[in-house]
Amino acid sequence: LDSLTQLNIETLSNEEKRELLKQIRDEIDSIDDSLAEILNYRATKYDILSTLKLELDLNNYSPKREKEIIERIGKSNKTNLSSKDLMQIFERIIDVSRAIQKKVRNRN
Image (cartoon, rainbow, N blue to C red; front, side):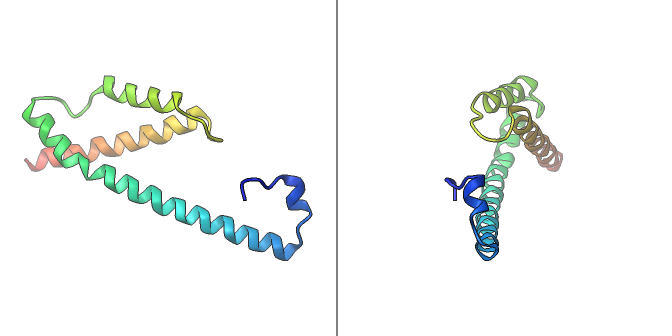
């Protein structure tokens, strides 16, 4: 699939194009499932992270740490996504992380 070019696609029959479309959608579904699994695994770390921050009298919000994450992700980007797009995705992940940590902290 990765080696297909626009020219290769144009030579396919409509039936082959539909099959290829199905294959690509199936692959994207599998990737989405993996992303959800990874994000859920990441979220399992928030409870202990929040507890440790509380014990160490640290704030949930750490702009320096968040900036480090965003910059690291932006620098390591080697995809079709722009660095800006990838950084925005991670900013949202961090926002959700902070919100979950706040809930955990409020329980304690």
